[in-house]
Length: 172
Image 1 (cartoon, helix red, strand yellow):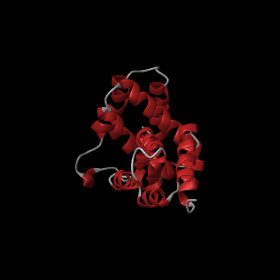
Image 2: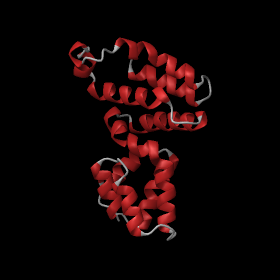
Image 3: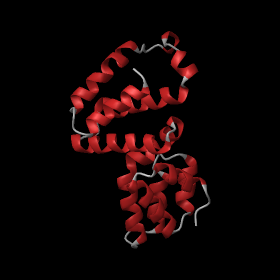
Image 4: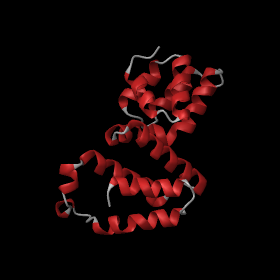
C-alpha cells in the first residue's frame, strides 16, 4: 500500500463512501505485514520515499483507532487530503499535520484571544503545550492579532501551502 492508496481511501472515507471500520480494514494488511522488530522491517520504502512513508504511517496511526465521532474523523480525513492536495509535498504535509489535526481548536482559541476572552498568557500556555513544530510555536507566540487571523483564514480555506509559507515568514 502506498501513500496514494491511503489518500484515496481517505478521500472515500471523507466523502462518506466508506465508514471508519472499512477505512481501518484497508490498513489491516499494512499493519499485519509490518513487523514489530525494526530489524525485520523492509527498509525499501524508507530509502526510496521516506517522506511519503512517514506521512503514510502517521495517517494510518491517526485513523487506526479513530478520534471519537465518525464525522470528526471524516472532517479530519478531508482536511488531510486537502492539505496534501494544496502542498503537493508529503514532507510539508507531515510537518503541518499537528496543526491540521488541531486547526478547529487552534482557530477557536485564536478568535477568543483576539476578542480578549483568553489572555496573552493563556494563549501562550496553549501554544506551549500544543505539540506543533517548534517554528510554528515560535511564529504563533510572536504573531499579532491580524497575522493570527490571517493564518486561520488560510487554514479554513484549505490553502495549506499559503498557510505554511506564512508560518515561515516573520509574523506581522
